[in-house]
Amino acid sequence: MASIFTKIVNGEIPSYKIAETENCLAFLDVFPLVKGHTLVIPKQEIDYIFDLDDKLLSELYVFSKKVAKAIEEAISCKRIGVAVIGLEVPHAHIHLVPLNRVGDLDFTRPKLTLAPEELKQVQAEICKYL
Image (cartoon, rainbow, N blue to C red):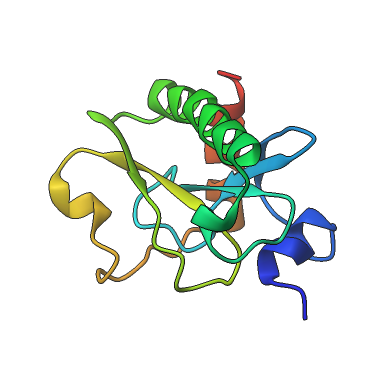
């Protein structure tokens, strides 16, 4: 069965797309830790990030860097935190999270619930810097 991320890649589930290449996709987390929390995935469904071949792993991280720089321009923060957990969805992914304090990267905290209009606004702000 396809992961929720594969369904997003295939257009079966809508997303707030930030950027895309032939092999990678970045989109807003719809239940973010903070505004601007973005997920970066390989389009190919591979469960564990360290099972990606070296070329795709490198491409994913270079792509993440470009997206992180855009988030940093769009969202007021001290820097962009990076987390790879990989337990929630069986599809390799990188969390890019705007940070103002260490606790902003605490995945045990309650997630935000943003209205679609807010997500669209954040999406547009980040995309301006790509």
